[in-house]
Amino acid sequence: MNLIYIVSIAAAAALAIVLFRMRRAAVCAHNRFAARALAHLESAWSLQSCSVRPAFQDLLPGRALGLLRFRADLCRGGPFRWVNLTDTTMFGCMKMHTLLFIPSPEYNLPMMSIDVIFAGRRRVFVIEVIDPARIEDAYLEQHYRAMLSLKPAAGVMPEAPVTYWYKDILAECSIHARLDAGCDDLMLQTYGAYLDAYAAMAREARPCPEHAAAVRERQRWYVRSLIDNGGPAVDMLAKLMGRARADAYIWSTMFGYDEQGGELSNH
Image 1 (spheres, one colour):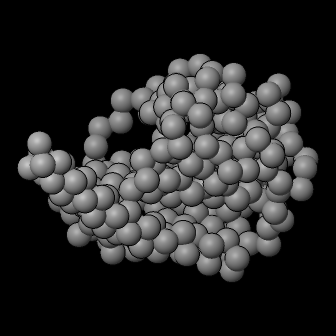
Image 2 (spheres, one colour):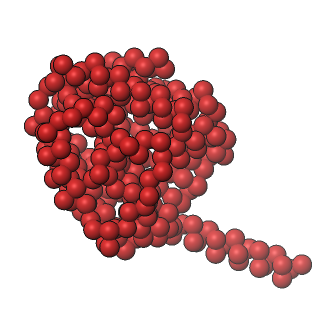
């Protein structure tokens, strides 16, 4: 019995050390991307902070038993109706960095959604340039080609197939890759290059009032479809928070709407 007890204690201690090292590595890697995002937002744009609903300010879904935590920073300004920067901690030792840009409907611009997951040495690196309106525009095509030129070659950053319902509204320059920690520098370089290229696209865009109603409706359509058709993050939120609360979080915190699709005006 004493031997079993000693072995159990040793195994628990070894596991604790492994998890601690995983968390420390994930936090260090995550912080590089978070710092790059903050530097970009502060230098490239004049944005105003938006308040997060009290229930979602430091979100710890009860069903996750404290193993999942979301902290969102929200802002808007310039050509953007909503910008969502979220820090997620998963299972105590994994991190996810999320940055979502939603342009104002007055501009015919795509959304850009970035998710980077740090799990031990494994990485998930996703940059999605999402164009729900699909309005033909030579200006956008020019910038899509410029962003595509920044995309690492398949031999360097292999592309995972996209099977989600929204694959047809993703620009070709989007990235879906599963990598390892040895690619962190390449990921960060690509991340920064895409931020700068997207900023150039948004900064030089001219208002298109003739398309505003269509862009506004298609942005709302995208959120409704995301909730109805699901996706990895949406499905996980529904399981951990319950469908009604997850829907409220997606509408308000992630995308800046009330549950009826009205744009939030709180600051």
